[in-house]
Amino acid sequence: MGHKTFERGIHPSYYKELTSGKGVVTAALPKVVTIPLQQHAGAPCEPLVKKGDIVQEGQKIGDIKAFVSAPVHSSINGKVKDIELAQHPGGARVLAVVIEGDGTTREWKAEGTVDLNSQSPESIRELVRDAGIVGMGGAAFPTSVKLAPPKGKAIDAIILNGCECEPYLTADHRIMVEESEKVVWGLRALMRATGATKGFIGIEENKPDAIEALKKSIGLSDVQIIILEAKYPQGAEKMLIKAALNRKVPPGKLPLDVGVVVNNVGTAAAIYEALVYKKPLIERIVTISGNGVRDPRNLRVRIGTSFEEVINQCGGLTGEGEKEVLNGGPMMGIAQSSLTAPVIKGTSGITVIDAGAIKPEGYDPCIKCASCVHACPMGLMPYRLGDYGKAKMLDNFKGWDAGACIECGCCSYVCPAKRPLLQWIRVGKYFVRKEAQRASSK
Ligand code: SF4
Ligand code: SF4
Image (cartoon, rainbow, N blue to C red):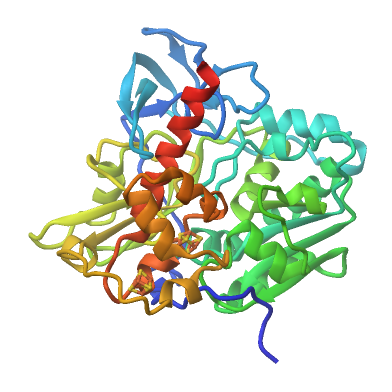
């Protein structure tokens, strides 16, 4: 019998072997870090420091009282050089704290043992918020908010997302192999914080060493590993919940509406470090891979280190040709216009690919082959959404359920006419958001 999965989706080439067998290496201490005050979904932080202030590694340097938010911390010891607009890997320019390092580091280690049963759910949520923890799979939604469901919504299951279905990326794979005990402990902390009685780790079949490591760390306990088919986008929340628990999140609803909270495995390891080491989220594991980088590898990188510095620690770019540098993997990653952008909490990977390989010269008319329809995991009509988004025909665009699109890119990937469907859908969504903003400001 095959492994569990969801309907439709695609099987792209994964190229995971470039880094999956290589242990994580700690990147060199950066001389300067640029730490954006917005690294999460929700309200941006306000700076808590000013130019000239001396800051310590782990010190909170930005926060805001808004419910959907997470503080940011200095990732190095040093001095605030400036607070200025800087390039964000999401594309915009945002306010950031620039810190010049003094070359020293701080040691983070366990401050005694932590008995989860003696911690109240509220205290775990507070510690998670205080440590600035957000979803580390890319979405960067503040974790403490996920752990505080509205009244009347009970959570009975936590699923850790260990699918990592994006091609090239192996940061989560290495965390599961090298830090499996932290991952399992973090999952139990999440269960304690929400009152969930069931804990699962969803992982694709193509990571046998990670499955073995997790099995050893779990032992005989309440936590269950669910092995899933390697298929894209298996790691999308709705696909994962359907495959793992056979629960369907209705359109417009959230996982908590079906009693589930999904967190990334890296987030669980960060929760362990926050509760046991009292260490905020100031560094993360990043996969640097692709045919455009000389020595693909996984590095433990301080938040705020520039893409350029990280790529240089992987031997730099290959050859002479034009490169496409993506924040994330090739399916959902965001192309970078400048390598000055810093690694942020949600940077799971930096993919560097020869531009010629992924930038089609143009596209052809739609031949109505329906390949995009058969690939769409959300059961949408991507060829229509693409046309309406491109033409800014917003009523039609919304009418064909554009809001349900999870922007996985399966449709663009399979289209024989090379039509950039996801790009057009994103254009449509952008104008729908603008329209809603205009309506709410009237
Ligand atoms: S329409 Fe959206 S959800 Fe469907 S395949 Fe395209 S990007 Fe994915
Ligand atoms: S896959 Fe491309 S060519 Fe085929 S129906 Fe969809 S948009 Fe048209």
